[in-house]
Image (cartoon, rainbow, N blue to C red; front, top):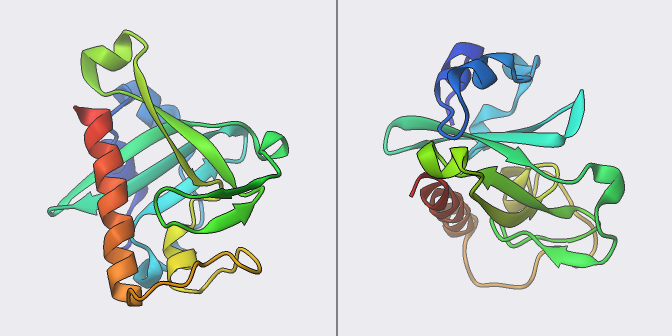
Length: 163
């Protein structure tokens, strides 16, 4: 993923108003992110731990989602699998809920999926971050194929939000 600016990120939100996108917390450390290892940028709001965001470039277009989830203190401690990168975590997966885009979202409709609570799927898939013993199931896919699967899963979630 190419490095993003705060303005690019704020302009890319598809499921919140321009005013809400202007007020949300964008990471201050954008220059320090490992962009070459990221398939999407994911972050949690440090001031509001129940809010999370992700931005991904698909087909040459940056799209971003506002998400809600339980704060890390309330995550389940049982072993769960992220539906994006298929990494197993003990206490590190949570339900992320995105308001739907447009009129459906204004009426309160939303879409949810289980994701890595720290939104670091890209780093888990590449082995740059470790979720602990047994976090990766044995599979015959290459790292590039797992990256492709993760991007496809995020794209499918985005499609549900914008449908």
